[in-house]
Length: 211
Ligand code: CDP
View 1: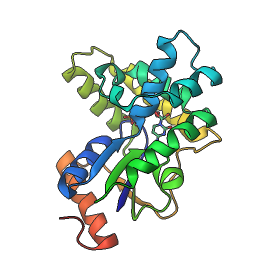
View 2 (view 1 turned 135 degrees about the vertical axis):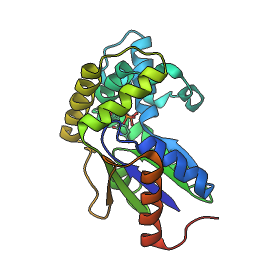
View 3 (view 1 turned 90 degrees about the vertical axis):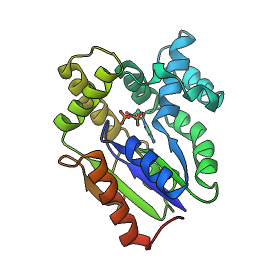
C-alpha cells in the first residue's frame, strides 16, 4: 500500500508522513531530501544549480546514505533543491529510486510535491496538506530556532513564497493537487490534530489500515 503526501513548503507533510509511517509500520521517504541532496552535490562540485549536465550527474550518482545530513535542512538547501527540481532530466533520474522505495512491503509513505501525480499515481491514499503561508513560515521559523539557526521570520516566509511559486509554476511535474487527493488544511491544527485528521481520511478511503 502506498500513501502519497504532497503539499507546499513547510506544510507539515514530513512530520505527518513520519507519524503515519510509524503508526502503520510502513517505510517512509522524504523525497524533498533527494532534491536537496542533488542541489548540495552540484554546489559542492562548483557548478551552477541550473547546469543540467552537472545536476543530472549528481542525481544519477546520488548516494541515499548521504541524505542524513543536517546541512540539508536550511533555507539555502531548500532553495537549491527547487532550482535543480525544475530540470526534467533530474526528476527522471530520481524516479526509479522513489518508485522502488514505494513498492516495499508492507507499504510506504512518501512525501513531496508530485507523489500522487507523477511518482505514484496509483497510490491508494493521496493527501494534499496545506496551511497559510504565514502559519507555515511560523512553524518553519520555530524549527530553525530549535536548531539554533538564527533566521529572521521574514526571510523564512520569503523563502516559502519563492519556492511555492517555483514549484507550482514549473512545466514538468508541477506542484498540483491530484484530482483524487484529499485536502487537509492544517492552518488551525496541532501536529496531533493533523495526524488524527489524516488517520480519519485514510480510514474513510480504505477502511482500517495497517497493523
Ligand atoms: O520541507 P519543505 O516542504 O520545505 O521542502 P522539501 O519537501 O524538502 O522540498 C524541497 C524542494 O524540493 C521543493 O521546494 C521542491 O522544489 C523540490 N521537490 C520536488 O520538486 N518534488 C518532490 N517530490 C519533493 C521536493
